[in-house]
Length: 194
Image 1: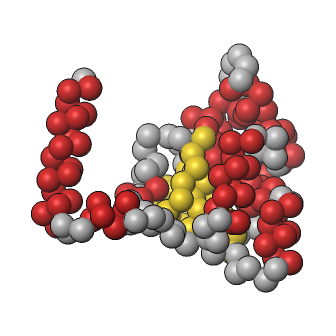
Image 2 (image 1 turned 30 degrees about the vertical axis):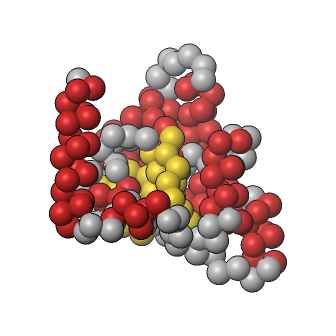
């Protein structure tokens, strides 16, 4: 398997050099992305491909169910670096339909730590929105709506982080966005609080 991946890598290098002989020199010179993408680790949701972008265009953090956890030093380090060092202008939280982490949280699938602890806030969010979610007949559609509510909630959590307040106090341009990737169609939509 590794041999096949390395062969793919060599083919990719050849293609990139043919398209743009300075591609790797440009990447090696540094990064200056304007967007931080916080998305799900799901293999069906590769940020650059979904947006038609190239290596170097996004600063990316992915985890199960695109969570922003104020207790997670990994996630916080990515956000802080993006804001303070890279000076990103946009932070995107992108959830997606058919999210396994959201479904497990909704179904209360018996899981062991650390994943059980990680998705517990999504279960709590489902409980907060019981009336809305129960009004949706299809269980898959219900979980898809929960994924949307979850992305919106993550933007609220982002807004409470101290580095965002500091950035805003120094008038650093910074916009937050909640998006949802609809796997069945490939479409990304902007989510808004209702």
